[in-house]
Image: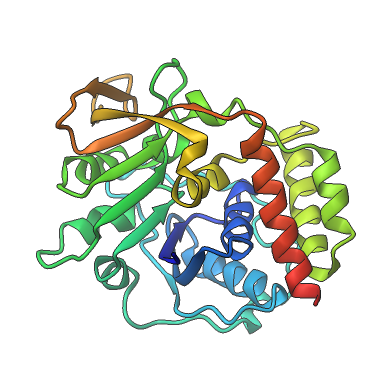
Amino acid sequence: MTTDLVLDTDIGSDVDDLLALATILGSPSMRLRGVTTVYGDTTLRAQMVARACRVAGRNIHPILPGLERTRSGREVWWAGHEGQLMPDLHTETIDSEPSAVQFLAASTTVAAVGPLTNLAAAVEEPDHRIGELFIMGGNFTGDRIEHNISSDADAAYAVFCSSVPTTAVGLDQTTRVRIDNSVADALDQCGAFGTLLAAEIRQYWNFSSAGFNVPHDPIAILMITDPDLFEFSIGRVEVLTTGEDVGRTLFIPDDSGPHRIVSDLDEDRVPALISERMLAAAREARA
């Protein structure tokens, strides 16, 4: 079976958004129906999506810039290297209609791998059709407050308070997985799209002063395509929106709850499959 998917992303800062896009493009059981961008310069982010898809040989539309400002009023974090490896982004074709929120509200399955500002507005549309939401966000056993949720805690609160069935993977699980130089080297041998991915990976390593990165967002994609690689717990997610712990996520087990979180994953197979799917997308682009 093929899953029709819409991706909502803050691509450009952490490379994992781009890697999630590549994982989707390399997944034979997934059809990308469109992409919406969120948080900060969403036009630049949409142009980055358009460039990546074009280099990958994929005609993906619509690509829609979404909401720039957070619902909570929190200032947008901007790394500064967004789009630097993609010259002349202004020449890329992106879409303006429908709005990102309208498009998301009309979509059945959504993967959200950035702050949840667009999704909060979409689930508040009275006739929205979102039937399943897959999120990279939160931290359900550790002390660290996760970026996507804390960047717009009010939006995350609205999404988790909605009636939409939601599956989330948090830092407590994603940080168990790494992408290292062997993956970047392999991508570099797979044509223009692979070279683009490898360059973006290494740029982020330079920014983060690390020789690896955590593929947070691609893991959220595998929750959809390969759920057998994960164990899930059912319950309810709550988001703190006030006090010193704004953005902290709490999980309350409840067999009748509307939410699932990843409680375990296959530490060997998950990174291997992410690498496999990205390489497949790069090889297909070269063919």
